[in-house]
Length: 91
Ligand SMILES: [Zn+2]
Image (cartoon, rainbow, N blue to C red; front, side):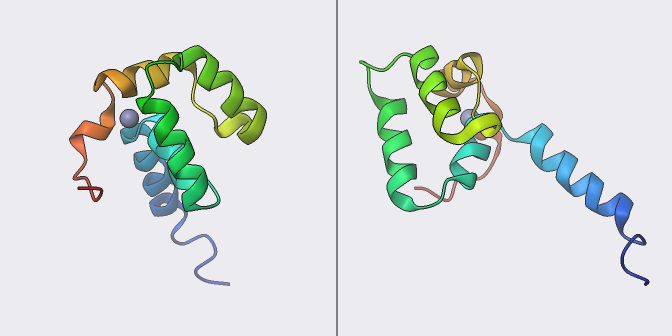
């Protein structure tokens, strides 16, 4: 049964790091089922006609608890989130 719990602390640390360092929008984008969904969310994030609160409500309806809050979306849009500290693979 080794391996089941030996790495428990490491696994918790890895998960905690991921969630503490990454903003909710980035986590959601990772969790989306396909590229079409990711493109749709990114388009909404970039749209001047979409409010952060409105986007948050729709995402919560579609994605449940993984959806970021309106405040988190606002920070992400304003470049004040933790995404900026990560090397981007989208360039
Ligand atoms: Zn972000």
